Image (cartoon, rainbow, N blue to C red; front, top):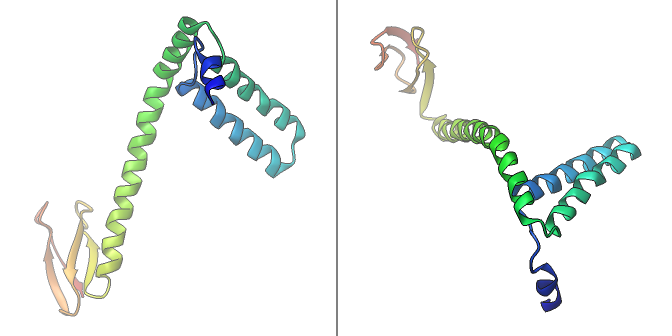
Length: 141
């Protein structure tokens, strides 16, 4: 392994753009295999070749600038994806609580503000008051 360390001295190595090229290669090759498109499999080798070219390059300043330009484009996209994933996980978190409570509680939406309200089961017809907008409505539990 020492020979590899010596060979990589003075070379750029991996960065976020290199990882993005590798992920693009994997996605394109999977799609090519799934839909049996040999031309797409050949095209998939282009990002892989670019990834290796960047890793073994000795022009560190130029590769760094390429990565900075990529990150300027990727950062807003990544932030948007991160937020949507957080919202999806948060929604799933609430769903798991609803599944645990399904025998003891009912969930209703407020007709005025659409806030989700949790009320105990088995109380018959009750008047529910929304804590957000103070709207009262009657439901059977």
